[in-house]
Length: 228
Ligand code: MN
Image (cartoon, rainbow, N blue to C red):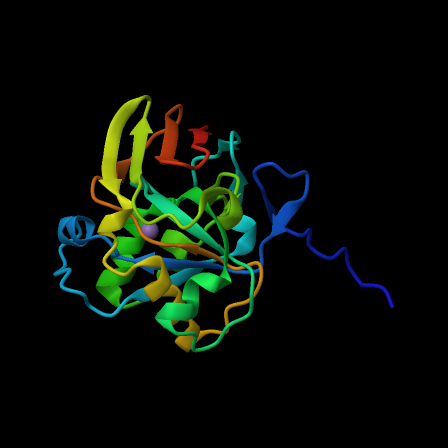
């Protein structure tokens, strides 16, 4: 059997220390998972139940690549995020067992058309046009748990043209990585190849063409992209 048209390419992310790559199945993102960012977006962060949106897997952008400024926005934002790569199927996993399902960690940027997202929020519409557009998910190489352990205390930062815009610590996540995996697995069966963007700290803001965005989490390879 063949296909009537060319099937889409497998999207994948580089793995530190390996020539082989991590194939991406789905991209889940957590909303408002740092208290100070929830506040800057006008919300009360007192542990509202975590909520999610998704991006298509082909929104992944390779570290070092140029990112075209997207269409139909005048307020295009960066969001520094710790990304978790899943390597084992799970449904209703407990918080205690959740980290057994982690393959590794990477640095990501949840690029956002903030104006379109804001309009969708106001009208009670889905966030897809604000969040799930082309090239909206840059991701640096994955470091395996064997290489770096679990990332629980680490500075997370983002700079635009070398000026620091976001500077926090992943220990400030409202819902920890284990809690996010456990909760998300009650809603969806998580599978090998899934990535979870775990939320951004405060300090989000706009970029324009020509800006260079660097994102880092201590212990992981930094992510650098230029907006063109
Ligand atoms: Mn985000």
